[in-house]
Image (cartoon, rainbow, N blue to C red; front, side, top):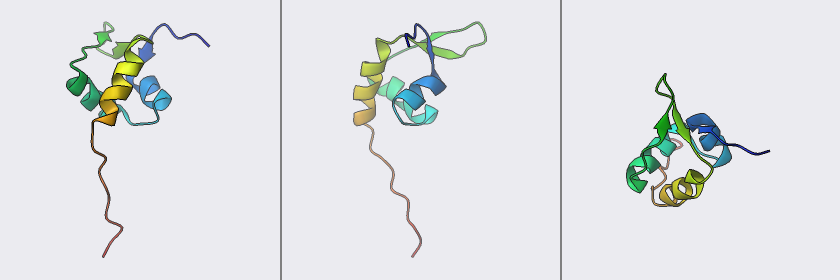
Length: 67
């Protein structure tokens, strides 16, 4: 399946993360995605490796399971 346009939700699923982490990765990678007329973020397939590299730099949060 060839994807020309990838939304933030699709990118999150492809990279097995959340849209919030994708937005954080944008800030780290200084990546400004294109936007639709309704302001939805859209990425090209070439953006995915950049996002993936930036995601690796974001520390994961550990949740306490209770004391």
